[in-house]
Amino acid sequence: MTPDQHRARAKELTEAADGLYRTIVEGEMPVDAFADRRLTVTIALAQLHATLALGPASGWPSPVPADEVVDYGDGFP
Image (cartoon, rainbow, N blue to C red; front, side, top):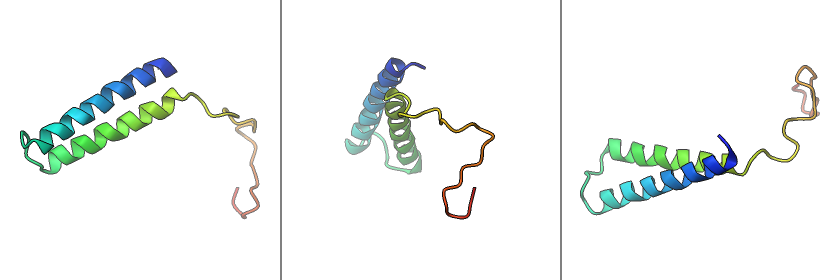
């Protein structure tokens, strides 16, 4: 997906999460584990797509070749 597509999907999911939340608050859907999990997952997906819409972070991909070990000085590669 392109950043614009991620941005559009994040907007759709945010609206879906808002709608689900309003449905729960207005008592149209019982607040049970299903509704809670569904809202949590929808919010998480919206956050993921919003992050991906920002595009790759500066310096990505890493300038370090994949087969090279980087020593951060903590004793672990």
